[in-house]
Length: 77
Image 1 (cartoon, rainbow, N blue to C red):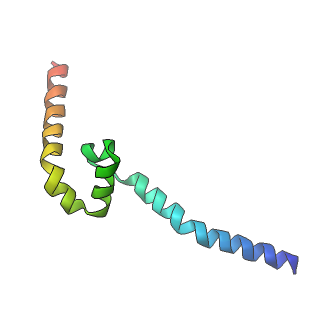
Image 2 (cartoon, rainbow, N blue to C red):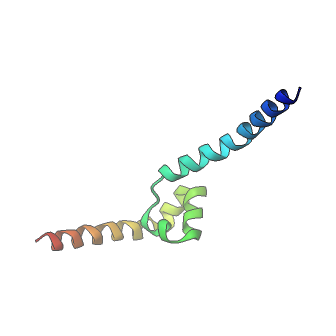
Image 3 (cartoon, helix red, strand yellow):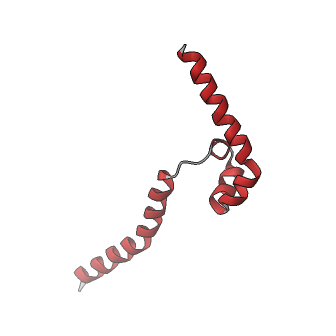
């Protein structure tokens, strides 16, 4: 009987932690925009409503990418 209790507890722990672990793995795969990767508030906005983030901060992200591209071109020469 004790053997079954261990199995039940093990199944319960697996069922509880599997979704949380899966969400954490998926979150690590995401590549947030530059502004959102450096600011927690913007990261939360990006995660909850990507369209609102794009409307408010998309232009700044594009300027950042453009500046980084220009910077890499000048350092390569």
